[in-house]
Every structure is written in C-alpha cells, then in structure tokens.
Amino acid sequence: MKKKKKGLSIKAKLFMIVLFIPVAVVTFTLSAIVWTAIENPALLKKSASTLLEFQDRHTATVIPEDYIPIYKAAGEEYGIPWTLLAAHHRIETRFSTMDPLLSPVGAEGHMQFMPCTFVGWSYPGCEGLGKGDIPEKDKTNPEVIKKHGGYGVDANGDGIADPYDIEDAIFSAANYLSRSGAAEGKIEQAIYLYNRSDKYVEDVLWFFNEFESQQQGED
Image (cartoon, rainbow, N blue to C red; front, side, top):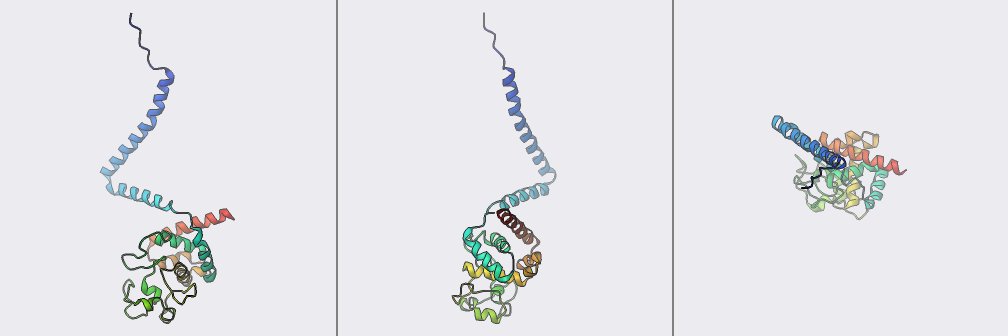
C-alpha cells in the first residue's frame, strides 16, 4: 500500500499565513497607488515629491566639525544664531560639497552670493538678478565693497573679501542675515531676504530648528 502523504503541519500553515500578510498589504498598497495615479496623477506626483523632500531633509544633518568654529565666530560677531549660518550653508551648497560652487544664474561661493549683493547694488551695471559685470579685482576688494554698500567681508584679514573663501563667505552671510533682521530676532524675514522664496524659508527653517535641537541635546 502507498503511504498517505502528510499535509502541512499547523505550525507550517501559520508560518505561511504570517508571511503572506505583509505581501498582501504591499500588494494592496501598490494597487491603491496605481489607482490613485490613474484617478489623480497630480496627487501621486505631489506624494513622490514629498517623499523625495523628506529623504533630502534627513540626509546631511550632521554639521561638519571644521565649520563650527567659523559659524560661532561669525554668529558672535554679528549677533545671530550660529546654527542659522549652518542651516544656510547646508541649503546653499550642502556644506560646500557642490561642485562647482557656482549656480546657473551666477551665485558664487560657499554661501552663494550674487556678485551685486556681495559688492553692492550701487556698483555700475548691477541690475536684474545681480550677476553684473564686475571685474575680479573689484569683486573682492573690501574698499570697493564698502563704497557700494555690499555685504562681502574680509574675515581673515588677508585684504581680500572672497566668496570662495570659507571664512569670508560665512562672515559675509552673517553680515547679510544680521542686517536683514536676524540680529533683532526676525529670523524668517532675514531668511526670506536672503532668497525670496517661501520654499527656501521653509527649508532653511527646518535645518535651523534641527540644528538648534541637536545643540540643546548636547548641552
């Protein structure tokens, strides 16, 4: 006589059921997403964008230690939170990891200054977005910057205010933010004036609050 084949044990059946549940949930979720895309493509696009934004925000939230003394010195000099400088630096150039440090519209250096903002808008030819046509010798000359009311700073005392020098760039950003209201506690106003975009304000504030929380946790 042939032996009767044994069926799956109760434990095996329970194990298979437990394995099946996550698969079923994933399948249901994917089906819902596909159906949502068919019914409302804009909603799916928004959800994907939000996910990418979430992922981006949660990367590079560790402040490079080499920059912290510069942030603190500049923050103390201009009476603003040093973590605000770190937040701007993170948003502008991902802590100077972008290559090159030059935007398509002409913003330059570690903190992405438009030349006319760095040198001063009264410099001849400064208009529009502020790229201007400024010779390098004038662009980094502290006397020219002072004459035209720019925000560029020679932080290390080498006689040059250079947006591509990390100290000069951070001190220049501190100067700008301070004079834009941050020294008076008007943080959002200062951020907005740095880059007139509500989204920019939201992003910088997110990192500013994140860095502030990190510092409070260390104290």
